[in-house]
Length: 110
Image (cartoon, rainbow, N blue to C red; front, side, top):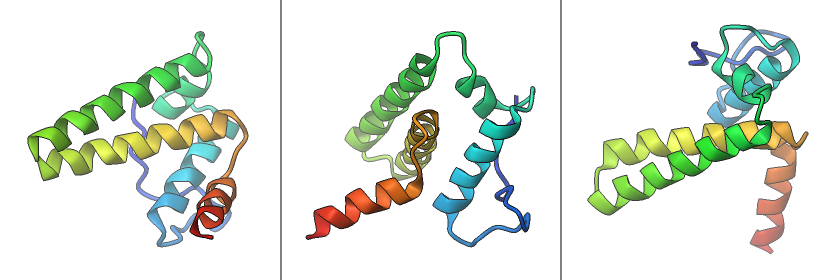
């Protein structure tokens, strides 16, 4: 299964230049179309429900912590990207958006 988003599947089919927005747009597009060869779609439709995505989020979080503990910057970047991707999938499962996340972050800035 491949799901390495080259660009967002938005109305214009052009990337926004904001990687987080582009990635979330791909997650949302996969949620709508559920392509058979999509890793994202497989997480969204897994027989164990959200638990599959949550377990992957936990696994990737642990891998990030271990990379940080080892001081491996390349691996930290790789695992951080995996953590963010799986977090976005979980947000999509719960019909949340990046606007929800941005609002919470803005609230914390005071």
